[in-house]
Image (tube, rainbow, N blue to C red; front, side, top):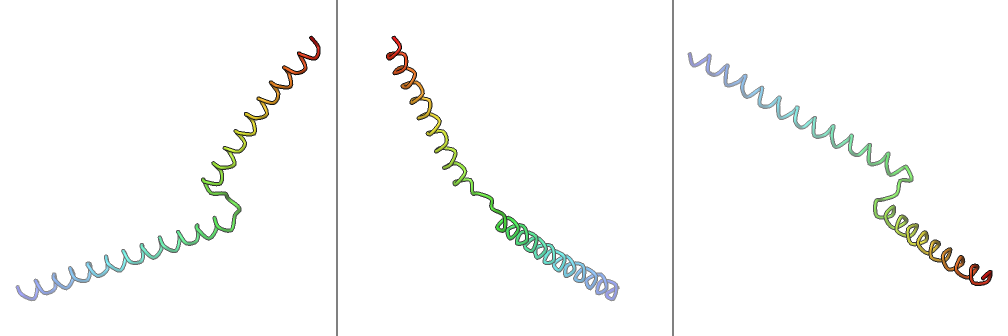
Length: 82
């Protein structure tokens, strides 16, 4: 009976060790995949969110200034014609 318990304990220990190895391999694969994706993204000329937001704000400001200048020009032209 004790031999049977020893065998079960050995099998249990083997399974525990196998799960630890599998978890380690999974973590290593995830790290490698993340590193590969990060390297791939770094090789591309993608902009950061902050850069995108800054350019978008500049474009919005330029659009508003353009509309204001268009309105002033229209008022000046109307004055000259009137």
